[in-house]
Picture 1 (cartoon, rainbow, N blue to C red):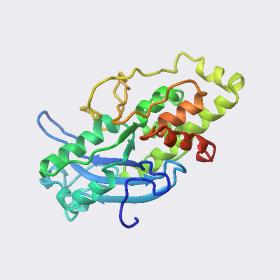
Picture 2: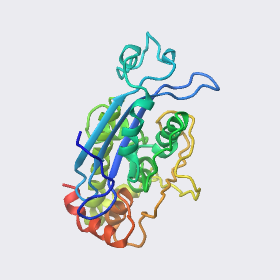
Picture 3: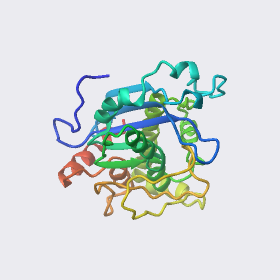
Length: 281
């Protein structure tokens, strides 16, 4: 973990990307809420996708009874582990500094994680952090990479690329998320380089699906389940600033545009595209 946080790359003045993930309780009956048990994040450079900063913490819920003493969770987040952890209020300022004014990235964050973050800040009467853009890898990869790896769960994508087993711990999962994005982008780059050899073979399959965009005003939309993609995928992803691909600059160019973002100026986007080869190494 590094020292003081900053929202933009000091050299290019483009917003930094923060991959983040929450581990929560799961409501067992109607009327119960999700309780945040762990927050983890990495801040990465959009030019090199290198990790600049990381932060993770367990979080003690107000009502400890929501975490059973005989918890069957496989991730190791037990009653004993969280009972001496800081409350969300104790770590809220640190979480705010990690997230505010940056591009948020993660798997299914639009429907789950950003909703839970907003709820947690509302509960302590503190203004919630606001992203300048959002990259939900569930929507992006469903459109650009398709379902060649099977369902769009992070564990399935990681297994497809031989990245190991998902641990369901926040910091481990966000690092895995970044590696999955890198691997998908590399495949798309190779396909765009050899379209007659590789592209038609994979994209000719009827099993490859695309998503339709939604035009809602909110970057976050509630979803009742935890992190798994819904059975019927509604995979539009939202953004608070325009950064989606436009035009036809080849499949990988579109992929890089969508996977990263278009910042405040076209100059920022061009800098990212010029570095696309190095990003994939």
